[in-house]
Structure formats: C-alpha cells, structure tokens
Image (tube, rainbow over all chains, first blue to last red; front, side, top):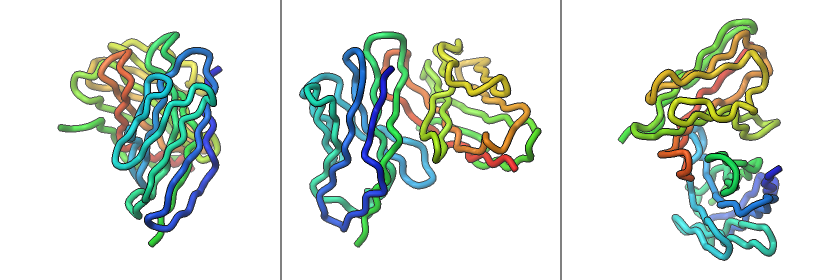
Length: 114
Length: 114
C-alpha cells in the first residue's frame, strides 16, 4: 500500500537558518503530494502541494519539488523564523483508485530558537 | 468565513462511558473525514463520507466506534464504551468534493479517558 516516510524530529534550528525536512513516498500510481503544517493546539493546514512530477509547490517561503525519480518531496525554507515552529506532515493522495484519501507521514516537529 | 467546527474541544471521561464528538463541515463541502492523532500511531484516517454516505470505514478500530452523517452540515463520532487507549486528539476535516484534494481541518477534540 501507499506510505510516506519523514525524517524524525524534533529538528531544532536557530532563526534565519536553512531548513530541510526530508520526505519520501511509496505509491503504485501517480500521487499528488502535500505538506501540511500543525501549529500548537490547532488542526492541520495545507502548506503547499504538487500534483505531478517536477512540479514545485511553494507558500510562505517554503518550497518542495516533486521528484519522481527519487520518490521524494523534501520541504525547504531558506530562512526560518520562530513563528515557523510547528509540526510538519508530508502526505500523498493516489490519483487512481477511489476518492480523496490522504496518507500522512508521522510528522516532523520543528523548533526555531532566537 | 467559519472553518470546520468541532465540539467539544476537550473531553475528559471515565472508562466505560459513551463519548460523542461532533463536527460541522465547511458549508458547501461534500466530503467529511474523521482522523485520530496519537503519539504512538500518528495521524490515522478513521472514516470518510461523501454526500453523507460512508465511503471507507476501514480505519475504524473496532465496533466500539461508530460515525454518522445525518445531513450535509453535521457528523458525529461515537465511542461506546470508551477505554483509556482511546485517549487521543480527534480531527474532523472536510473538502469541497470527493475529488477535490485540499482537506480543511477543524481544531480537534482532545479526549482523555481515565
């Protein structure tokens, strides 16, 4: 079945540091890929997405590129802020098969310090 | 514009009691999802509905769990009888349609079963 593997956290960075959170996936078809973010005490919010190979999703300074050859969708940001502290979830949705079912990774906690 | 609304936000109950969690999806959204989040198992999809009809309940852990969607603006997740291992954060999410990819999450209900 489909699966998503994320790097384990927590990831602790200083403000303005470069961020990479690795995500790889296993899928039988042609999935869409997502990054969701969960701030403390809140539900998940869509951060960015990409629907086909070589697409780059971007939002709020974050980017991720859909790499079919390496089955990866790594999240990057050039300069993190304290306000980016949250848990980040990589997810996929299979385009074949039924419906709108997302498969999530386990989440990576990011802590940004001054 | 109101997002997904969940109630209660926090619930503390004793083992054996019935627990009912409620969700109001975003108006006009036709798909609704129930997730459970724990430290051990991460984010798990329990069940999802399209046009008020359950499509996939394979994630419902056991017969103690049941979910209903009597109309387009309301869904419940019931646990009867509750057990300590049911303690988790339960999220409801909705999307515009069965094929529309972006899911919008509610703030969650934090359940503690003593």
